[in-house]
Figure 1 (cartoon, rainbow, N blue to C red):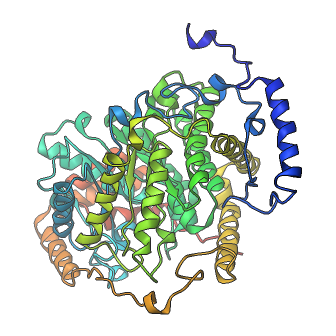
Figure 2: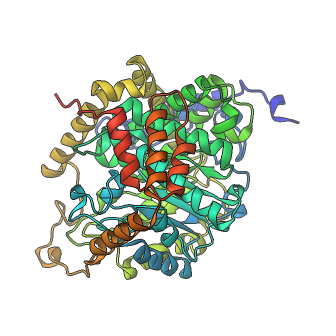
Figure 3: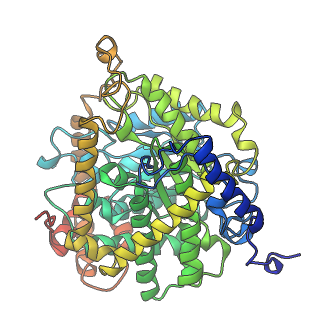
Length: 569
């Protein structure tokens, strides 16, 4: 029998039996619970009503093969690969980034030595926002909260001794304007090392929402320009870097800024829709690029809802790619995602409680079928992780992998009446939110008009109110706060104080030894191409090979695309 032979109309449960269960459930409510179910009073974090008890009648319309299916087959509820973690465990990927590239290179090697199976780098604020370390705008921020990257020399130092042709590299570039430059530097580094592009595997974050709706800065590119650069990176990678994920649609930071799980996934999927439409307009086919699109989810404390979110997101994505864009290749319909546990749930009071929070969130990610995972360290409410706390995060992942046995079977919560109900409900709410975005002209228009900013601000405001009035309980903060442990001492990571001086000196030497005329020529080509309907990536790569700096290229973008003000009114 093939899958196409299965009766797609057959429901999971015998409907006569379901009716008997419904009747018994009503009797139980009256006689055993005596009407005190509390139904209508309990909700998930996304506002989904949660009943006291779930039975087959809550999912009586489900058709097993159509709505749940088998792992590695549509609709991919149960996972994108047939044998999931039996075939390959999720990648243990801890973010690192501080000081100079040489400093972060040391942390990479420490993490890999202790069991990390990929690298992940976070950039300092000047780099993310497109300023060189010697720019006045960067003063006091160089190498803090991330690593400073100014030129190709820095990328070469960052990955010195790291086998980039053997392990995957995640680069948290955030903004598309940063992505196109850093990604070009990474490709140029590989080219200089003689490593074929087809051996490079990794991910750039590359999400225009990070520039235009989530982050903030005095100088922001307009949404259409930022979106264009996002698409340029994806198109370039699809043609030149076959194993590279040129985008990780960033639901994570959207959630941290202020959304629920539904909006987190829906906005990321709406971005994927807009991307696909734009790349098709450019003459690409859906199967040319869709197989390398990836996503980045934030897993909060609502354990079962977060698992259901992961399962539902795969369903809706497969529908979009198959039904809307007519993708033919299976890989184009697979939603692959990285998970980071929820940084915003970490507390400064009683910070050791964060170990439990992150472990539970990490377990939910694995039960939800994540492809890679970062477990937040307990001290990240203070600063970057120390080596000790980062090691605890790695050990947490390794314990999940080796001691819990949860990786031994695929999607072990499938069939739970509650989880299947939540998955179904979450999928429908995601579809509805996408429809709302599209009714307003699509995601770029929703950013341009300020609609998405208002959605974020309203949710964040209500969440903070709920914390302050105790509606949303946080252990140790507003629920059983303990004066005795509130001031619990933790070792706080200290950023290297010499990073800024070192980066400025490197830039000074670089500008003295490079061919300034060639750099200016390459920058002028980028300037000209900003006003043509072409992909900017090849021209950016040419410029970084001549050691044009990140800030110099980004200044071209600011001058040619202009700046944009957040629609906050």
